[in-house]
Image 1: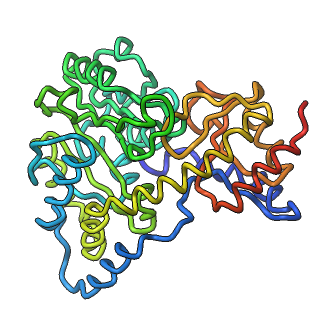
Image 2: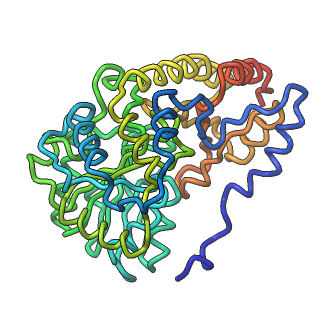
Amino acid sequence: MGVSDLADYPWDAVAPYAARARSHPDGIVDLSIGSPVDPTPRVVADALAAATDAHAYPQTVGTPALREAIVDWYARRRGVPDLTPAHVLPTIGSKELVALLPLLLDLGAGGIVVHPRAAYPTYEVGARLVGATPFASDDPAEWPAGTALIWLNSPGNPDGRVLDAAALAAAVARARELGAILVSDECYAELGWDGVWADEPVPSVLDPRVTAGDVRGILSVYSLSKQSNLAGYRAAFLAGDPALVERLLTARKHLGLMPPAPVQSAMIVALGDDAHVAAQKELYRARRAVLKPAVEAAGFRIDHSEAGLYLWATEGRDAWESIDRLASVGILAGPGHFYGEHYPQHIRLSLTATDERIAAAAARLAELPRV
């Protein structure tokens, strides 16, 4: 299979509903994609500007200062001590890594790639790109023999589900039984809201409670797009098994996958400054406090969504019908069909809109006909 064999890009199907939403007299409230709308922190933008004399090729492995910043961040923010620069690697955003990981690990055709039932579609794209078979399952007992790669996603996109340390440990144990590589996509880890995650940090798959200090066969992936409003910078990284990191580094060198030098400098500052992360979280907390009750009052049930940037909701009808109903009041959401076959009646609503647009969405939801 090649890139040309992939299905049409799914978001193209949303265009007619977007056009309908834009026709609202007060304009569209776009809660579909989840692209940050708030400014990049000044301290990070200044670091990027100061590093623009980037006349030499950047290092694929990342500068020593960046790798140390990633190591320090895992210890300080994720409760993962004892990493070294050999355990970490910067990437050009996280989506390219998710899509290319089966290729970079040389999984080849015939293997199985496990991913969550409610899943970011790029996990499946990466599997199909190399001729592997995607397998949607949240239960380690279901993961079959022949599994080569397992994707976890906690907090989940689209459903905001969080795996606690015990669930992560069970997944690691099963991966080792199968001889599979396990990778946890943790890009929303700073955004916990409900239950224990209102007060406790979301655990990483590299947490010693999960690994007992043995990170063989395990990788964690993180992005600064959400916590630091750096989606346009394409700033992300992975950490874990140093043998896997070395394999990926070699492959990325051959393919020229080098994070730009100014971005590497900006990442160092972003990773070291917790204040802007806390401030951004409070912005999302306030928007969620407005949007969530409005969605529920409009007749939707919200499932999971205890962390992350989305509300995973259903009104008990096909998602496209819900998308159409919302578009009639100028709101654009994402259909559950995009996240696998298991949730055809769910929609995803993003918190990444301005305060004014979130307030407008809440007001419009009150006008949504109950049928």
